Structures are given as C-alpha cells and as structure tokens.
Length: 127
Image (tube, rainbow, N blue to C red; front, side):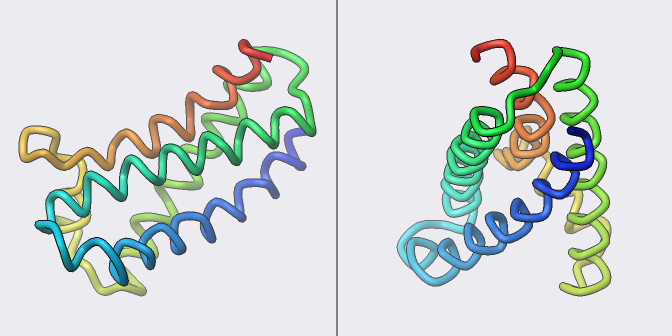
C-alpha cells in the first residue's frame, strides 16, 4: 500500500502546476499578488483534499499509523520537490522560496504541505 501511495504522490505535482497556471493566467490579473497567493493556496488545499479523499476511498488505508507514514512521506517529497524545483528550475532564491511560508506577511502556503501531510490520516479517520 505504501508503494501505491508513493506513486499516487506524483499526480500532485500536476495538480500543483495546474493550480499555479490557472492562477497566473486568470485571476492574478485582477487581484494583488498576495491575494492571488492566498486564493491559490485555498484552491490547492481544496483540490488536494478532493484528490486524497478519492484516493483513500478507492484504496482504503488499513491503519492510522499507515496514514501517518504516508502523510509524512508525502510531506517530505513535497518539500524536496518544491524547494529543488523552485530553486534549480524556476531559479528562485532560497529566501524567496521561504517567503511563501511567512504567515506574519499573509503568506499562507504552509497550509498546503500541512494538509498534504494530515489529509491521509484525517480521511482514514473519517472513512
């Protein structure tokens, strides 16, 4: 089951890229950059929730421990991908990448990796 959920993480990359593309090609033209960031965070959380809910419905987890392991695995993969892609491919500085996690500045992206980590356990509990 862990291997299946490991492979199921890869479509999350597509979800994130589509989410960012929608942000940049639509509503970011009509709101401030901070508002676009916040809207994008909300839409990412909603779409990830739907995806993970569907995944846990199709392939039920067998224990809360398994759900926690999967959530932690997804969190690590997400953070590695986000920072390595952002820095080496998108040419963002480490400082710029970390700015999206500054809650005091209204940057709420931290909720995306938190939700990715928690949703497997939450949905296991709800199922």
